[in-house]
Amino acid sequence: MGKHVLFVCYWSIADGLTVSTVFPSLVQLEALSSVSKVYLVTIERGDFALEGALVTLPPKGVHSPFMVKGNSKTYRYVQEFLLLPRNLEKLVIREKINFIIARGAPAGTVAHVVSKKCNVPYYVESYEPHADYMADSGVWSRTGLKYIYQKKQERKQNVMAAGLMPVAESFKQQLISEGVPASKIVTVPCVADPDFFQFNRYERERIRENLRVFRTTTVGVYVGKYGGLYMEDETFRIYKKCFALIPDFKLIILSPNSKEYIQKKLLQHSIEQSKVYVAAVPHHEVPAYLSAADFAFATYKPGPSKKYLSPVKIGEYWANGLPVLLTEGVGDDSDIIKNEGGGAVFNLTEEGSLEKALDKIQQILKDTNHRQEIPNLARKYRSPDKIKEAYEYFFGRGQEEQS
Image (cartoon, rainbow, N blue to C red):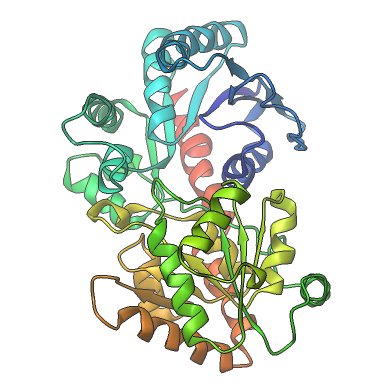
């Protein structure tokens, strides 16, 4: 009899991160002959969270949304950290779950509670030092209750999780140095489907024609949020520098942040709005806009823990052949770019660093082969095969040994 898997995701089923990072994992679980059913639990905050969720689970998948209602932070906390584990415990018992996979350390906190209560093993993929991310980004205080609680939970996961799948090799080495056995760690970066995100000349011409962009225009694209892990005003100052240094520059912003927020930022930084296209588009439309662009932005807030990141957008940018303008010290990608190309890194605390990085981007764009060569980085470092290899290790060989 095939095994039943509980997959816990802290985002909505409609969230772009769910589509881009969780669904590739579900596809790989689907391919395992040892797995017969996957129960995906997502956190749906608000009465209308599921509207417009045009996603289809693999045949073995069953969506079990957990609805969080109300605007009170205290009430929502009670639901997510007290009621959710109880609901998952019932699901584990009812559906005879064999093991749990949590997407990220916050979901790992809930998986740990359920695992202990129901005596089933749990694994944490996309494992990152979440508490330190939030502190380094200025969102949490290191003396605050949120940081202290999450840090404590991550230490528990280091010890009690049956397997950890960090997104960066550097974090794997850090975990080993802290005493976590190497045998229960497999690095799995955030992957990108090379076929789905590949450059499409037809879409490039279609989008650029719709946006009234000339063939000679250099287009930069940013996909993602502002705030939290990501720079805000600094990013718009970077955009302004692009308009000053790159001839005939235009910008595409695809963001879940409101259009009003972005337009206000553009106005604050004296950026001409007619030269910026702002939209929120479904994940399946992103590749067309990437094809229309010439290079991409990955403007993360710097900090010691950011070397453990694996931004999904970088894999998607590379798969499309776009050189990436990246904050120095982010994930394994910063060193990959320095050593193997695929973009340029900048450090806003170093005078002239941004200007040098933008000059390097323009030099890359002069190479007529860059659009064919950069996708090799995505295939090498962000292939979905990374998930397959980890799952075969843990749930093929590893699970058979445990049973």
